[in-house]
Length: 413
Image (cartoon, rainbow, N blue to C red; front, side):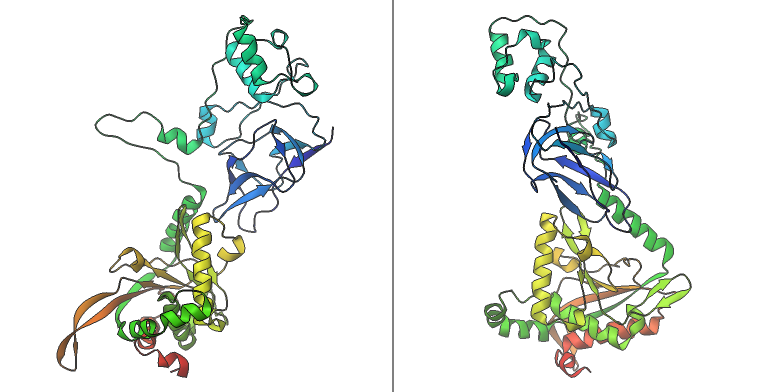
């Protein structure tokens, strides 16, 4: 018998531990090399862990909801396929606490040839292996053998063992009894949600956050988009949206006012000579901010393709650590959900963030006359420790001017 340990490698420099979400296999199952065994959730991403070898999964050391660290042995595989299955008992309390699930490894030789489903059924009914004739491979007892023995009138040799609950942590909470007239549900935060909460509190505690507002007439951008969107999609294979224009306008403003693209490290100000723009994206597990690296070197089509790719990956939970790491400035589009105005929170260690909101027709004054225009309120939150109101206001004005007159982006005005 050749035993292969299942572990996870180093997560990342800033991630010391993770949560094992759920196993795709159970003890006794055959596995193929590179077949997905389980999912791991860090405070940034969820990723699949493949099997390091083909064989039989015969022991699981950490169950669903358990906390894991790099290089910890999580399971064992018999690469020769000769190992006996080891049953796993998960208590409800341990599942809810997110701790490691203990294994009731079968030590008796007579029980070692029972398949997991058969061993479980025998424990529940109180039957012993000596009462069941095995018809499986190499004389192993199958679930069908146990059912046949029960049908033949075999009497329990010991009191039946009640089945152990197998609810995952979240499922257990959701399925808990509710009060009749005032229902409540207690659901533990995911590791990602906990990290989001931690970072937001950190931002508010360490930054001197101030927000400045402005409004932008989107008429020019809308007309430009309507004129070229069909040709653009045909040429580049992606739809022409609005966020790419905001990204371009943001980079334009950051060039003019570099402190908006800077960060604080101790008592130093780090001025970044590159423009890595974070795009806030909603996912089923919470808000994530993948990065458009070197956004100043990207075309409108490049930006649209990357945003579409990130949106798809966020929904599927397939964003990588590399795609979520770094960033010098963030653009958050609350308008896609209908937000009219907000004060976005800075994403540490960045020093500023742009909030975009819903574009609505509003009455404004142009040349002394009241006209209807598609208006969007912009908000820029900034760290007042290093960014003065002058730079913040002028930076937001630069974004506004570039959006209202896109030719400025071509002429670098």
